[in-house]
Image (cartoon, rainbow, N blue to C red; front, side):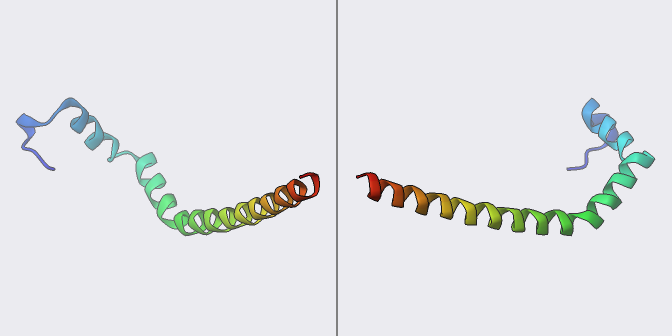
Length: 68
């Protein structure tokens, strides 16, 4: 929400100044370019964790049957 300058908070002014820096612009471009890789990695890693979790649950169930 944009406010007229006389009603802007100190934090809004700081944020506006930060957006003008080279570092902010570089980070924004890198984030846009790398986001698909981050999303795919997260999806794949979650799948791997789910598979190992399933294996663990199955083994726990089998051990419970054997001991029980």
